[in-house]
Length: 264
Image 1 (tube, helix red, strand yellow):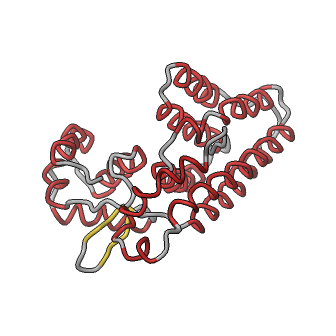
Image 2: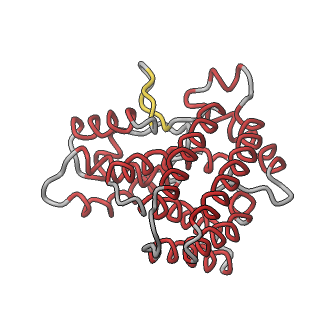
């Protein structure tokens, strides 16, 4: 479903984030966050005039921001049609998880001797649990992303943080298509807590084993559910951004993730 003019107007409140030195990078930061939150769903065409007006930036600045996000694989440009939020292929989802496994497990393996600085990880786990108690499943999804960003942050590497920021933002494109956050994320609340407690106890090898199993299970479940949704044949390939087949297939994806399947 396309974002309405009134919803686009909500971007105006982000204008203050640009400050006095408006740059394409800062515009890209805002749009990246909005895409990750599902404000602009996969398959949606981004209205250049409306977004530029809402943020108060020039067309050239906005186009440069689009270029940056296209390079990050969050947007796609279709000749004579415009810029769309990318719809991932099933192979993209599997590849994202391969990257996550390589990076996240390597971070845990390389932590060195305990104790570890777990304040951010603890806050993410507790935030997810509180959101679940309140029935805020989108909040659980966001807390889960924070958990993995905090986990990678234990490496103390700005480059790794930047890499995972892009990887996790891209992954959320799949989460927004398979749009039942409770079924996707509830099973992983307990597993997040288990990883945290293993690290708190200084049991790095246990944490790494738990994390590897977590990511393998999450990949298998999400790939299955997402594949049933987006592998729709000619209609999927013909649609700009693939949005219509996605909407029509959500019921199939919901069924695929029923019975407690999750993704983290």
